[in-house]
Image 1 (tube, one colour):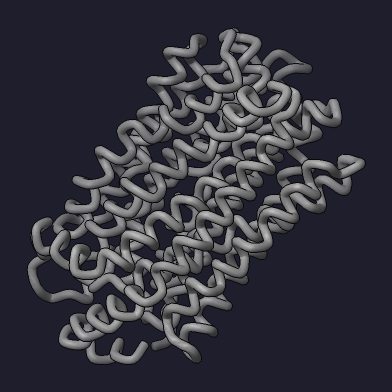
Image 2 (cartoon, one colour; image 1 turned 60 degrees about the horizontal axis):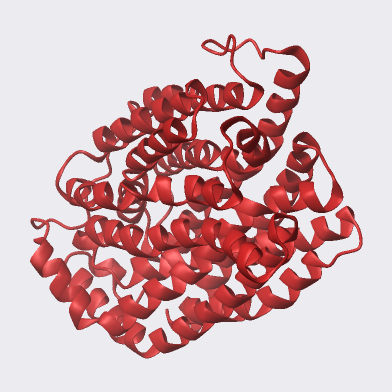
Length: 440
C-alpha cells in the first residue's frame, strides 16, 4: 500500500507533538544543578522529580485514555492532552519550590498519558503493517529530536537568561533563569493544538465494536509469555535510556567541570546523531529482518543491541576527555534508541487492530512507567550506596545501564517462543478484518 500525502501529514504532526512532549519532559535533566541550588534538593530527590513525579498519574490516566482512544475521537483526546502537559510545563517555571515542581510534573505526566495510545492507534490504522516499523520509527524519533532540542535549545535559553536576566518571553519577568526555560519550552505546545484541528482521524481498520477490557485481558493472558517478558524487557531497555537522558548532563558537568550550555550543545549533538540514527536504523532493520525471518527477529535485534551497552557505558564513564566521552555517549544513545522503534513495532505487530489503544495504554502503564521511575532513580542510589556519592554519578550511570541492558536481553530471550504464537493469532484475527494484512 502506497503512503498517501494525508498519511505523511498525520505522521508529521504526530512527530511534532512527540518532539514537544519530550522537550517539555526532558529539559529538566539539563537544569538539575541550578534547580538543586534554588530548592535545596538532593540528587535522589531530583531523580524522583524526573521520574516518579511524572509517572505517578501517567499510568493511572493512561488506562482510561487507551479505552477512549479505542472508542472516541482520537483528535480531541490528543488535543486535550497537549493542552494539559503544555500548561503544566509552564507551571514548572512559575513555581519556586520542590513541592510545586513535583505537582506540576505530575500534570505533565497526566497530559502526556494521552499521546502514545492515540498516536500508536492512528499510525497503525493509517499505515500498512509492512511499513509499520518505519512509520513508528519516524514518530518515535520525536523522542530524540525533543531531547536534542531540549539540551541544545534549553542550554542556550539558560545562558541567555543568566546573562541578560530575561529572555523576553511572556510570564518570565522576575523568574530565575531555569524557570524562564520551562515557560519558554511549554508555550509552543498550544500551537500544536491548532495543527491537530487540521488532521483527519483515520478510519479504523477494525469495523467491529472495540472489545471490553475483559476480552483484552483475556487475549493478553493467553499470550502472557509474550506480553509479560516483552514488557519486562522493554522496561529494562527503557530504564537505561531514561537514566542516560536524566543523568548524562550532570555527569558531564561534574566530571569535566562544564557549564549547562556547553554540555547541552555537546549532548544535544550526541542525541541527534546517535539516537536518530538508532531509532531509524532500528525500525528499518526490524522491518527487514521480520519480513525475511519472522516478526520475532525484532526481539533478536534488540538482544544484540543490549549486549553492546555494557562495554560502551564503561568506556564512556572512564574516558580521558570530554570529547571521547561524548563520542561514546553518541553510541550509547544509538543503542538506547533502537527499542523505541523495533520494540514498539514488536508490540503492535502481535496486537489485534481493535485492541491497540488499550494494550498500548497497558504497555505504557507498566513498561514505560517502570522505566520512567527506575531509570532516573537508580544511578543516584548506586552512587550514594555503593560509590563515592554525587561526584561519581557517571560511573553509577554506567553500572546502571550495564545491568539493565543484560536484564533486557534475558527477558526478550524468554519472550521469543510466546511471541511467535501471539503473532500468529493476531494475524488470524486481523485477516478477518483486513485481508491485505495476512502474512505481514
